Length: 81
Image 1 (spheres, one colour):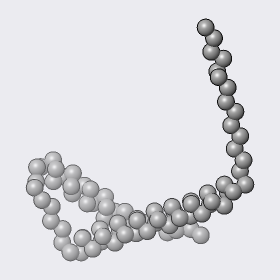
Image 2 (tube, rainbow, N blue to C red; image 1 turned 90 degrees about the horizontal axis):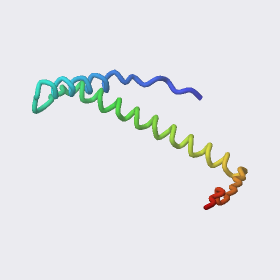
Image 3 (cartoon, rainbow, N blue to C red; image 1 turned 45 degrees about the horizontal axis):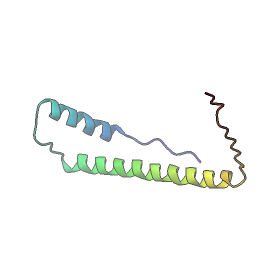
Image 4 (cartoon, rainbow, N blue to C red; image 1 turned 120 degrees about the horizontal axis):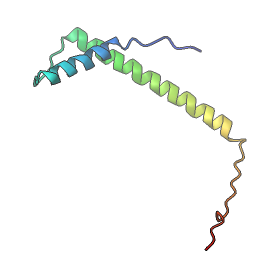
């Protein structure tokens, strides 16, 4: 199953807007409702994708780790005085 790419352009626009505001020492940034909605939906999509990928990774790790045997050997390192 392949996920369609997420349009992160609204995030990039917002970050650029914050950079410009910071450089010009503005005290606030105003967003119209359309821009705010688009940004909110993009953040939601990114979070949903991250959660989906995280769940998939955990599921794969659980199924793969049950049969693995880890062997660890330790010695003193051969210190002599």
